[in-house]
Length: 489
Image (cartoon, rainbow, N blue to C red; front, side, top):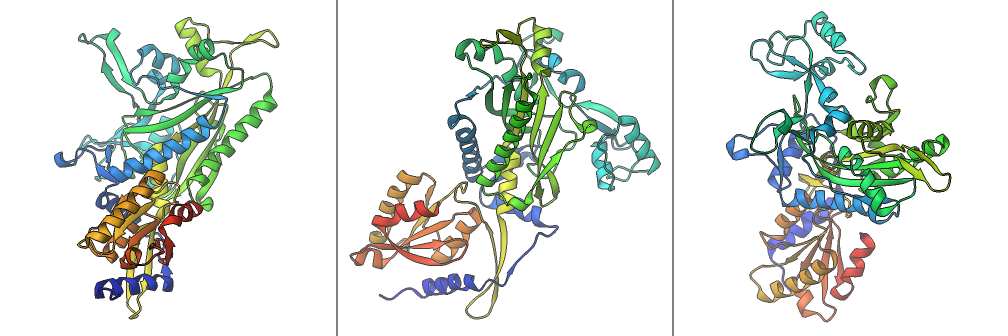
């Protein structure tokens, strides 16, 4: 069989991958490269882009949606479907304003704001200090203000700054036709309160025994003063949260449960394929914890722009249930049938951000190789080294030539078989094989299956399976292809 010259060149280029001479390290432009790749390949787009965009909002394209959905499905399976002690809920985004008064958000959900006196632009005071190498954790507004004045810090535009003050980050709205104090509501800044206000409903309908948890995946909204770092800090975000209720009378058991939930969080990150050495445990000091937390542990990750918070774990005690009991007048206590005691349970809260997890996975997978071809020439390859568990496309199926009906027909037959079994399968016949490989590499597809003339002419009906990471190619019979892929997934 005579192969096209272009195809032979592609094979030589693929073989050259085994002569990888260098894995490029992160550069200051890594985030720019990641953002560019995400747009170019249909992962993430700027929100409202054709109108100049809207800061702090991003839209997810087909591959971004697929990646996020996989993250959410894996999370739900691990923390809800595979357990018997956690119940799923989906609370409304709009809630009675008294929910947010009771929780403390109306009075205290704020960030330190400072204003450029000339342009009137607003900035996070703590972020300005961080950019000067100053750690603002634990500082009061007065301390931040004094430090800004002492250091004579200017705004990013080079102008004088005003006083540091608090800025409430909740989006306020009105429900109904009449806009008065009674019609005020808020776009929820977190999903947690929807679970606390449904605590009694779950008790009355499912009668669970402690310990048990409620889980929810949903949107949250925060009017960030200065959203930044791509999808890391957003005004519209999605959370996956658990409120796990425990018996406070057994302190040892509470601490063991806290540690077990932290271990589960880290295990989930590793299951997503994140690099172990980039994951860090940070115990939060009392002065830096939220007002409701008795103990907090953040899981931080090495993003291209630094080590930042990825997950949170907080021991919220009985703060929320007690606050809602007092504000609503509804008894949110738990009755222990064994001891005949009534008490308000304590709560441990593992929090996961879908957007930050998506960014961590993309940033961790972003890889640049420098290759040496058979002719001794260097070529740069930019791609996403996703774990097969999360890759938006697990397998791409291609005919060697798209103008040969027999190859196309057999390719679609193989595509249909794999699509039915794995779901995350694409059909790609755009451009020559080399271009398809480059495109699928950027998407992060672990395996490319090519149907060639040998597939349709020889009795074993084998296809070529190309590995994204090594560039190696292997002949696999179509009848054995599903099992071959399952072993590697």
